[in-house]
Amino acid sequence: MGACLDSPHPGLHPDVETMSRDALAALQLDRLRATLLDAWTHVPWQRARLEAAGLTPGALRSLDDLQRLPFTLKTDLRDHYPFGLFARPVESLARVHASSGTTGRPTVVGYTAGDLGRWADLVARSMYCAGVRPGDLVHNAYGYGLFTGGLGAHDGATRLGCPVVPISGGGTERQVALIMDFGARVLCATPSYALAIAEVAEQQGVDLRRSRLAIGLFGAEPWSAAMRQEIEQRLGLTAVDIYGLSEIMGPGVACECGCRQGLHGWEDHFLFETVDPDTGAPVAEGEAGELVITTLAKEALPMLRYRTRDITRLAHGRCDCGRTHVRILRIAGRSDDMLIIRGVNVYPSQIEAVLVGRPGLAPHYQLVVTRHGRLDHLRVEVEALPGVPVEGFAALAADAMHHIKSLIGVTAEIAVQAPGCVPRSQGKALRVRDLRPKEGRT
Ligand code: DLL
Image 1 (cartoon, rainbow, N blue to C red):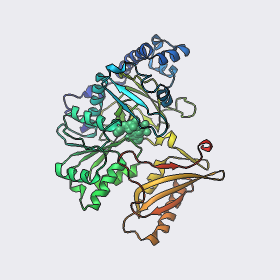
Image 2: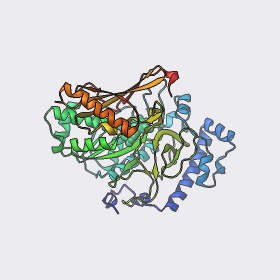
Image 3: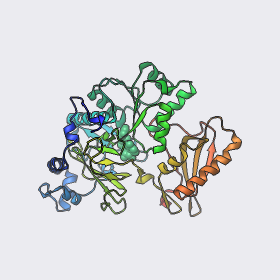
């Protein structure tokens, strides 16, 4: 059994994480029945559509019956804005979070005090799984506020017994100074912001590799293996992938352990499925599909078969660490972010994997998609490393173009730019600027 399960903190329950599949399935069925009953009783919209599908809470005989339940979409939450899908009256809740929503209404989610407690437990479990230990100082650069990252990581670290520096995102020079002065062992941030912190440190002549940072808990946006390597090398820490989404809870739905063979999805609290994003039919075991999640212990906002839009593969079978919970492999991207360039499907993270670490290029990029006549055009804006002469940009562009064509199969225009031209993020990076007319998008 791996070290990440040894002598756990008294608040954690390794017996749950190493449960036999049969015991886990029995627990899941009990909790699924309770969730269905709760949704049926307290959410009129859920009841109406379950009835329309000829289902009652008693209809669940086994976990296989999950597939008979209708999906829930992000638009369902928006259509019932703000609290229409809540199973508890808003005056009984402890907190509300919301996604900013680039278009239209935000997506609003709610938590009872019990939900907040279980969320903190799962983030603490995730952090422990990643190697964080009670007493480790946690520098939390996830944004505090309506975004679930800041407060979610904060409460989990507190639950684990870790002191927290609640710095939130932004003020990057100060982040660097406090990491060095306070001696944080753990950094929580989006991967793109972690890189921005590394860059500012380098500009200030500060070597973060000499800081006490040992573990980075990075998530909230897709990131490639190449980006992981880049961050580890520049920050001198072990970069761990943590996944979550506000509609289901927030950070801590799944997290990597020391084996780094996928993120353990906490199956005592959630059911995970992968489906074909076009048809909704289950995909074969191990095949890539859209992740669908059902909550098993949420009170304020029980979710039945939520379509996350995140594309991944599930790996079943015991991990080398001893945990039995399913592993969610690195998220390739969101189906919404998938570009179809002249018939070839491309995720921004595939382009990232080619660009990051390529000689002469910095790991800062944006994809710009336009339409020329009836054809889509992909322009990759990427920075040169500081010190590369402008005369060298054309050769760097030709090299990147060649590798993108041969590895991914798309023809892209590469615009190599001077350092600092691509905007830096303080949270989730904007990777794609899609300038195509809305109605014509594929
Ligand atoms: O991003 C929750 C979170 C905060 C997770 C901090 C991890 C760390 P939302 O703002 O609702 O919640 O965005 C959720 O972000 O559906 C994915 O598309 C993406 N995402 C989250 N974690 C990862 C990850 C938070 N590790 C959406 N890898 C999700 C790839 C991720 N994408």
